[in-house]
Image (cartoon, rainbow, N blue to C red; front, top):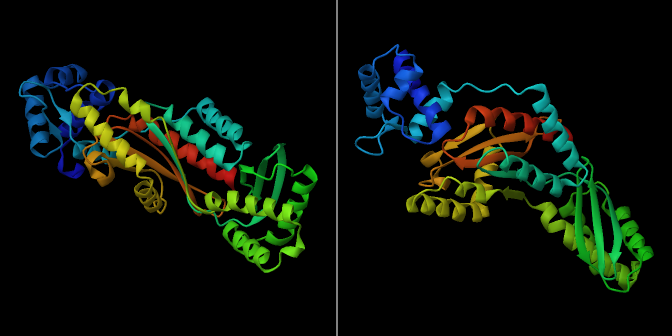
Length: 345
């Protein structure tokens, strides 16, 4: 589509989108003329805007109003006219420090903090997705927190750390927790979580005499708490309330409610994100272009992150109004995904 536009219509489309991203308001020919320094007359600009409207790239919300970009117009802009911001050295350092600070809290907390960080970039919701982990287990430890409560700490071969709170018999001591951890570590090394859970469950079913009843209960609780979440996919979405900031009409509120319903359908979200992890670089879905967000007036920008073997291991992204600052968010997401990939290894 972009090749079909001449230099004049391309420039005017870009100016309309830039103004829309900044204000969210319809843009008139006089405003465009002023931005161009009166190089073109308002009549000439109106003619070009009418051509863009005929091509389905602009529309007029009211008869006498200026124009707004359609979802197709925004797509053409992003694919052919967008100028990306360059991240400064301090901005890169800030991202690195934020991710490193989250690193010490374990994989789950790191992903959760990353989604919160992304939601704070603009009036948007941040999401982080990590697919099923196949990394072998390196070590399991149990820490007694209080009678009946313990912390399970799992370290995988790729350096990821998982923490879970689990219920244990109230009479369990720190010594017995250590005995349970030793039992697990002697049997699950180099196995994935699912393999480890299956192996331990089968072994305890065959012969419980290898461990006392109390230790067996701790082992079962530990495997039960670690395996389901660790073996499945992580999806964190934060900042959904930000999407309500620009709501000014009932129809806007209904669109956001539709989006919230879609976000709650995590199976649908996971299917979308899993498909995106096969992409190379940042991927953008604008408005109705994405069936999941159809009629919601929102866009999704998502970037996969890779491990040291260049294999995609997850994705990060933001969801917000179609007038997101794409030029700003794309390089931030791209760099953040690179930092996460280096940290996870």
